[in-house]
Picture 1 (cartoon, rainbow, N blue to C red):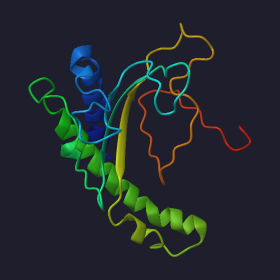
Picture 2 (cartoon, one colour):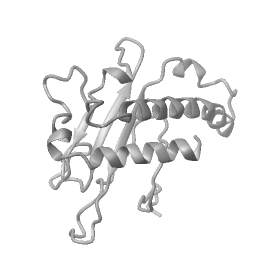
Picture 3 (tube, rainbow, N blue to C red):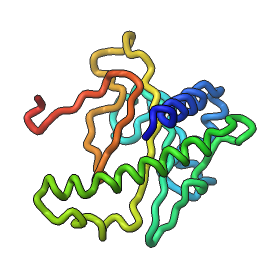
Length: 177
């Protein structure tokens, strides 16, 4: 993914989080009028994914696509109105499509690392699901030590590709080192 496309994406996401709260709340996840579950806006201090007693110190906007028995196209997700945030949907959609192509290019490397045929994973990815979470983590200097940007969790997808514009991610191995 080119630096230019990454910068367009980071800029679009920053512009989304600069919107008034009312614009973001109109896209809040799991609203009854949205036909797709698990997509939309999660406000600061949400207690979803992973569920916990104190909220996560982040905001998130999630879109997804999937094929197969349940068809969900990126354009089916809730989006800010084009006149409110021009180009956002186009930028995010182009980035999600590029991520999908990158993920598919990585499959033979996973196969090689496992010592199997390079096309081993191909049948399982003829119509992959893509879930894109765009997250904003505010500074945490005034939060207790028990506060997390996002609580410790395990990603349950086959592959997670992270793009971050600043430091902050901590990954623990099974030995937590």
